[in-house]
Length: 346
Image (tube, rainbow, N blue to C red; front, side, top):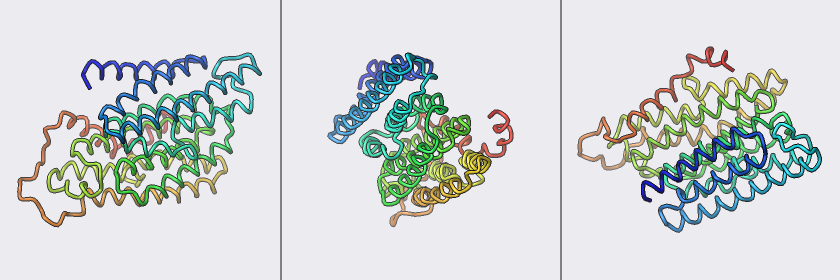
């Protein structure tokens, strides 16, 4: 792909996201989401591999369906209330259809089936955009419309996402699919609290995006997309592999790291809302995700290949993203001590 084309598609992505998150009229929101979808399709299909074309087709069909549902929901609400404003969503059927549309956009269970397939057919950098930036506009819509949506339905979908994301990631050997199921599981944590404390959802999303960006950029630097090749990276780049292990443990939500922060706050808030059984259930389901994060961390650092290479270990990399990875890794594993300050801001 030529640099001008890449610049146009990247600018369109930024434009679509900005239009969606800054609008309060349903039609401009829909237009922003469509610009986003059309801008990411060439980035998914740029390798011209059959799997990439298949991923782009699947992505287009699901996103087009979700956009149609969103517009249908807005029209139904406008028909009954005479309002096109995003905050005036009051009709129950429109709220239900909007929940389905946003779940499809985000890849939230039970509308999650497209997400692992699309990520597997994309390059690591495109997969990073799909896992973080492309989830920002629908997440913003979910935050704005959350007072109108059914909290019981959202909680059920969140528990289902945490369960399916954990179960289906257990048997995977492709790292992109493991990270896709990880994303579905993390979405469960974000959605379960959105009706009670939307700021916690936003905090969780930001920290998830931070940690996922670190993992994807590290994997892109060491050119790894399978568990079998991840096992050989320690002999080439020990420092990067160690950073990857710490970031994965943070993503799993283990206590000394940043990833524990949103889980701790969410469980605390659910308990305050007299939802201790739900908090217990989602905490236990996160153990499924912990298994495959530990598996990735084990493959990255603890397993040595049968034949150790004789060349010098590369303690420094010449990658242009090295400084970015260093900053992201530091924030991905060291924000827990400043949690009181973060708590005062939310």
